[in-house]
Image 1 (tube, rainbow, N blue to C red):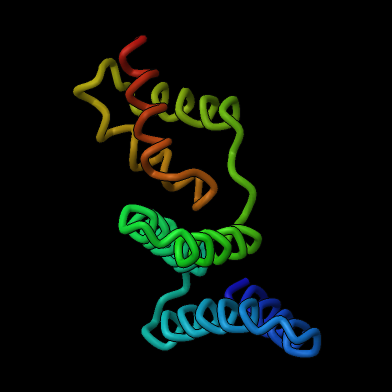
Image 2 (image 1 turned 120 degrees about the horizontal axis):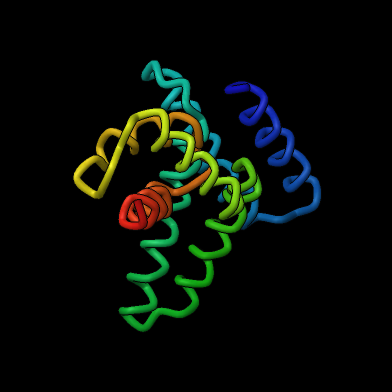
Length: 146
């Protein structure tokens, strides 16, 4: 899978070049470069790389917007949206709740103090399909209701 997303991005670069979409080409090249660097460094989690790159774009957009530069913020948000297209679909709230409930029953967790027992198994199962903050909030909510 690691090469398939990179290959898809490279194909999209060629298509964007033929169409004369310079901004899209530049954004895709940055993403491809990040994936290639991670692969060379021995990494194999392309979803983590894509999430990290998307997060950087979102944070940069917020910083530009805070500094009053709407145009640069819009460019960063556009790149974040482009990256999102290569990420796996997010889990629905009900799917995430089911995974959390299964981890709670499997770990024997009884309350908020057992959050660590639940987070590891849940993060392993969601495999990049849910943000860590979202998972943490779901686990905390479920454990508070236990």
